[in-house]
Length: 376
Image (cartoon, rainbow, N blue to C red; front, side):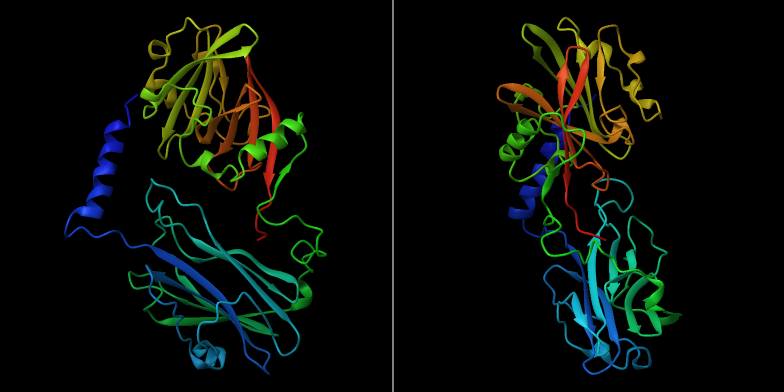
């Protein structure tokens, strides 16, 4: 169980040097872009994609005129909705997969989009930009929409894509009546909560307490799954940068337990293993790195001495479908009581967060939170 203090210090030195050391340039950053264009007076539309580096202007590639009737020469508009001459509405929504600070290509996630034509969902989370080290996948740079066909235009994978490379377009037949109206995307005004709204889901046992937590955390829960947190300041400050943190807590009047947090921030273990132990226990003598080698999704309490209990993912009431390796926890006090706020490392997992209360021999789930996400 190595301390991360040296790693943190090294990262600080590198950051400081980018600000003060001559000749050290800050890393470039890339941004994906997508928009939709309709040609006035014609039944043709274009969905197009590109990347920019740093603050460079957004420029989309021009497609062969035979593919789009010259529509791609239209200057950048930055729009996600338009209407074709026949009255068909075109809607585009784009996004990116989650980025990670580890693994091959973890910091370069794929980009995707969903497409609606005449209120019907035609494509859902379709990838246009490869990522996660998938260097052989082609880049989709445009889709030309006509009433009878969709033309997909792409370039082969290369270091210059998507700005350079031969453009090839492939037609696919299209029939609008084969697709159903998306009543979620086109719901009646006011019938769907705004994106970002946090709702209490079935399984919540103390709604008043849960609403109080929402007031205590107006910015939501996103940071729980991306950093190691101790909002309630339960653990000693001097061990804040270490993988193992231990604190004595009161789980009920007069009943004390040691709360142990064993943390990982790598591809194999990106989460927190929370343990409750007798106050006389010495976790540093009990917990060994070899305990993390089991490939199972559940961390078995059989590995621990009598009187210890586990709080982790892949347990009933606590992300039973997510491995214990990929659930993070933050500490939170509400009305003087200590709770743990759990959130999975993978943003796509549901629910968004779960509030639990440590007990003498385990935990109970108190609040189930679900954030309203963009519809793809």
